[in-house]
Length: 126
Image (cartoon, rainbow, N blue to C red; front, side, top):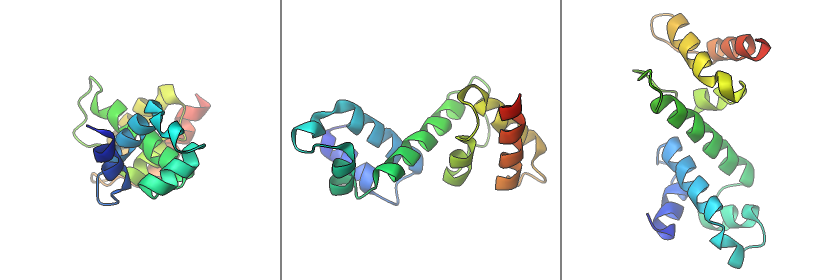
């Protein structure tokens, strides 16, 4: 995907969060934005209509999504953005365990943020 297409995805609030995060990660890693912008924050605001904080949230949430999607466990259900943002609070090496715990303990298949918080606390303390 070329730079313009990646910027479109990153700026599109209707695009899936994990695609926006992946696009941002590619854009910021490329660093060609440095020729025009002195800071990543300026670039994100001008081209993607995002604060640098929001850009980092999307990239982190995207990392969680792809970690779980590419897992050998083939999860039937993957986190939405709010859930992925909460899972970020767990240590990196415990994020898959957090999601497994959540799926196993979800009442009637309903995944609440409260359950994710409990799982994050459980695996952060381990």
